Length: 210
Ligand SMILES: N[C@@H](CCC(=O)N[C@@H](CS)C(=O)NCC(=O)O)C(=O)O
Image (cartoon, rainbow, N blue to C red; front, side, top):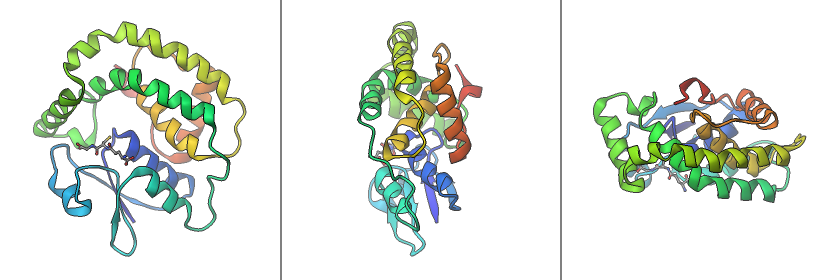
């Protein structure tokens, strides 16, 4: 199977996670930012992730892909969703985006490998979020909002042994936040993030912190 992604994309990370967790091989294909033609041709809209199944058909929507792949063989997302984690993710998403999106536009990702692609991405995010430098300048207030949320997440995580769809939505948010200098992952959050990093085979972004 083949998975079309952007490396930075949290929705694509969801789809990558299930392949890693199930130890299923998948060919990754990075779509360049600014390339509307490839996704339009495959699923009729400009969005990733896109899965090319073994029968040659394509599907979009990250959680549909996760459920489809989990349904092949023995499912592993066996536990019920964890409501508190889902709520935590929904609540942190707004301020989190304001922290990680402007940084993504400056970071090192395959889909931004040409100046044209980086500019296409910058413009796409500027259209969605307004002045990205103004967002960078708002970092102190945003850190003041998100750091206490990370503290709270540490208390929620506890000892988790079985995986659920909540982990598939939560971990990509933490991966995205790991690019933000000035955020502190409390020990329980860091242990959780690192343990899933190992299992899913997708790297956190602490090494690109800015
Ligand atoms: N609901 C979709 C959302 C996917 C999504 O928004 N992907 C973003 C990248 S993070 C995208 O493809 N945006 C289209 C673009 O390039 O404009 C899913 O879960 O797969």
